Length: 443
Image (cartoon, rainbow, N blue to C red; front, side):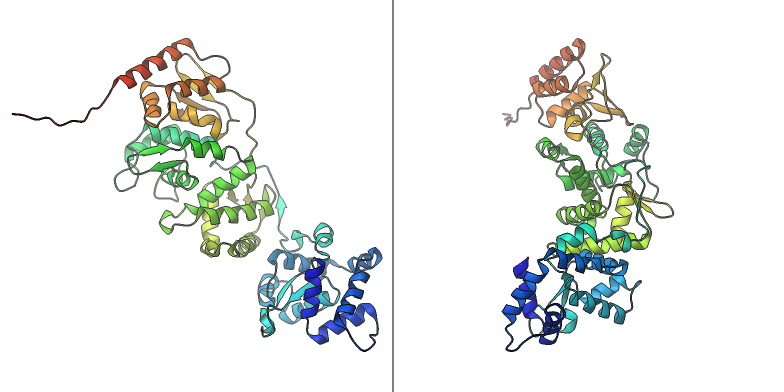
C-alpha cells in the first residue's frame, strides 16, 4: 500500500505535488528531492495523532463522495459525475476532488504521461482505505432509499422446486413438443401439481426451469430426452446455502432469454456482487436499484466484458419473475439462501407415498425425485414411488441398490417391507428385459 501511494505521489504534476508537501511539511528548502520529501510525508502520516486529525475533518459530504469513489473503484471524473450528479455540479465535484486529494484521502492516478485530464483515475488512498472503509464510508449516503425488511417470502425458485421439477420431467417425457414448446397436456398436469404460473410469459414455467437446470449443469436435455447429472447436483450441494442461492439466481438471469445465450459464469459474478452488497430484504427505489445494477456491471466488466449485455431490464425482469425481487412502491430483494440443514427426514408410507420435509436440500431430495413421481408441490412435497418411476430412475443410470440405500439413509425409520419387496421385484423385471439387435436372413 505504501509503495503504491509513493509511486502515485511521484507521478503527480509538480504543482500539485509541492502544494501537498507544503501543506503537510511546511516551507520547503531547496534543493528539492522528491524521494526525501515523500519519505518525510510517509513518516508524518504514519503517526496516529496525524491520522486522527485527517479523519476528524471528514464531514457528511466528504463521506458521501468517498463512498461513491470506493463503489466505483478507480473511475474517471466524468463517470464519477454521472454517478453523483444529483448531489454535485461538475465544477463543485471537481473542487471537492481537488480538496480530498490535498487532504490525502484520495489518489489520482495518471495511466501515462500523455493521458488526457478526463483519463485520470480517482480512487481511495490505499494507505487510509481500511480505516475509511471501517469508519467513514456509508452506502446510505448514496442510496438514500435503502432499508431492510425481511417480512416477505422467499423466491419460489429454490432447491425443492428444482427437485420436484426434475421428478415431473423424468416421469412425463413428452412434456416438450418437437418445436421445443410445452404440450397442452403437460401444462394441465403441471398446474394440477404445482399451481404456479405466470401470465406475463407465453410459455409455462417448466420451459424456463429446464433452461435454468441446463445452465447449472443438472440436466442434458432435448425435446424428448431428459438425463439427470447426479454428480453435478451433488457437487452443487457442497456449496454453502448463500452461494447456492446466488448460483440459482445466476442461472435464472442467464437463461431468461435463452436465445441470447448469456453466460452463466458472468451472471454468477453479477449476482455475487449484487447479493453480497445488499442485505437480505433490502428495499430500494427504482433509481437506486438501477445504480446498484450499474455498479455490479461495471465491476464485473473488468474481468467479464460481456457483463454489459445484462441490462437493467433483463436483471429486473428475471429476478422479479422468479420471486427474488418484489415490486410494490419500491423493490425488495431476497438475497440470502435459507439454511436447509434441518435434520428432518423423509416419511415413507406403506401406500408408496413419500413426503419430503421443508428443510431438504436439492442434494438430499434428488434421489427421491428421480425414483418417484411428484404428486403435490407445497412446503412439504408429496411423491409416489411407482413401477414406472422406478424404471425411469434405472433408465437414468441409477442402480437399484443405490436407490434403496439413499431412501433408507434419508428416511425416518426403515422402509416399509412391501416397498422393499416391490423395488426388488421391479429391478428383477427391469433387468430381465433385453433388446438384442441382429440380422435376419430369409432364404
